[in-house]
Amino acid sequence: MASQNILQIVASALDDKKAEEIVILNMVGLSSMADQFVICHGNSDKQVQAIAKNVKDEVTKNDYEIKRMEGYDEARWVLIDCGDIIVHVFHKDERSYYNLEKLWGDAPTMELNKILA
Image (cartoon, rainbow, N blue to C red; front, side):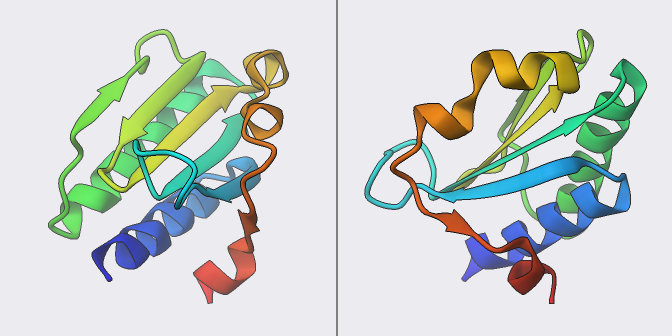
């Protein structure tokens, strides 16, 4: 149940900072790393950093742990490890290059609207 709460917190934090094209991949049974990958992008270095900082702040404010955050200073691909949920915040220019949605194309997607409701 904790991962569902964290997912709601993450989704809301991304939405608050106007993250674009938020995709949630259900990785249960596909990856031992996490239950969900949350992928989004920002249009500038500053927006990528603002999105990542807001996710970190909101998760910790709600008494959950951020295990690791990488790439914040470069603001090209910020990875935020929330345990069962891994958040990938890309710069718009980098997202299509790495194309995680295609790499994990067999993962079903989860509807953002249902999570934010």
